[in-house]
Each structure stands twice: as C-alpha cells, then as structure tokens.
Length: 167
Image: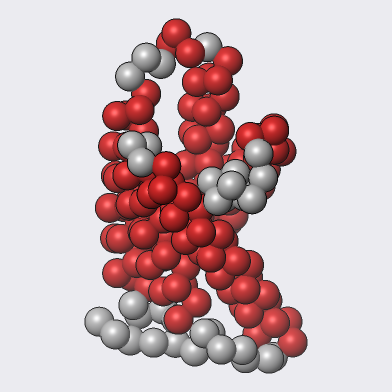
C-alpha cells in the first residue's frame, strides 16, 4: 500500500514482491493450515485464502511486468478479480460479527480496500484511496496480532478483543 498511496515509488516493488510471496503468501497459508489442524475453520479458511491471494498476486504482477505480451487484457481481469475478493471478504466479515471488534475492523476495511482496488484499475484516485484503506487495514491487523498475543501470553486485554455477537 506504500506504492498505492504514492508514499513511495514503484522502485519499492521488488521489496513488495518478496514480502507478498513469503510473508503475505506462504506465511499466511501455513498459518491457515495450522489453524485448520487446531479446528479453527474461520481462521484456517481466512489465512489460507489470503495466503493464496498474495501468492497469486505476486505471480500475476511478476508475469505482467516481465512478459506483457501474455496479459493483453489484464486490466478488466484485475478489476473483476479484486471485485470477487471483495465479495469473498464480505462473507468473512459476516462471520466476524460474532468474533470481536478487531476482526470486524480488519475485514470491513478489507472489503472496502478490495472494492476500491477493483475501481482503481480504471481510476488512479480510487486506487490511491484503496491504498489508504489498505494501509489502515494492515495496521489494524498488526494491532490485532499484538492484542491476541498479549491476551494469550500476558493476560492483558486491550480494546477490540472482547467477544461480540451482532448476528
């Protein structure tokens, strides 16, 4: 999202590729498998799905850059792809309405991010807005990671961790 918000240039893209493939992709996919083994269907499905998304994003972007001839109509495809991820993420958001505020924040802002990215294929202002929502979403995910870690390891409950039941 640093590139999408225009806080940095596309020269940062190799760093994003590495992060997307290994931390966003492989790391989340492995976390998803571990969550499924623990019996956490929501966590397993979400982590594995977004891990696969990041690995797919990496490959699509890499191939698009390195061999433009293979992807002549990629613009409309990217828009549809992001739109479908918005729909999938909205389905996950519904489940978070019985989880906690942290997860609700992450998934609601991720729905908005994907919707804006879908439109951002056609309008740079929309893409930049997606960058800001995506940055907030990612920051919320980092906060949530520490909230859950502190609750489990230190017994400290921070805002957003309390269970909710809106549905």
